[in-house]
Image 1 (cartoon, rainbow, N blue to C red):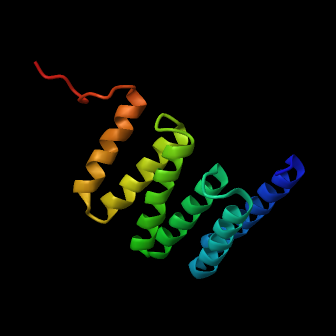
Image 2: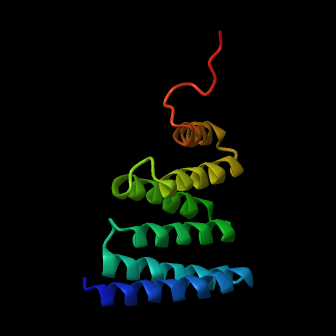
Length: 138
């Protein structure tokens, strides 16, 4: 993709995201979800599924589903964000760590602590630069 085309495509995604945010802030989640879905579809078409723009678009969509109370779809999208970012930026990248945290938050909010806790531990481990236990006991 030529640089001008990429800039134009990113500008379109930004415009969709701004409008989606306005709708969400007004409590119009169904309309916001439609725009987030358009953003996801556009990102797939222009960039493919292994691109940060796609990851951001499905993160936005997952957030809208979460706001609308559609937890299964929110979790589906947030899990995909984690998977995509793991592949394209790696597990030490801030966006990956943030996406793991976001997923853990939704799981915790839905009382799925058995799945949330290891994700929280992973976030702490990645942020502290350790792969071992969080505390060493004598």
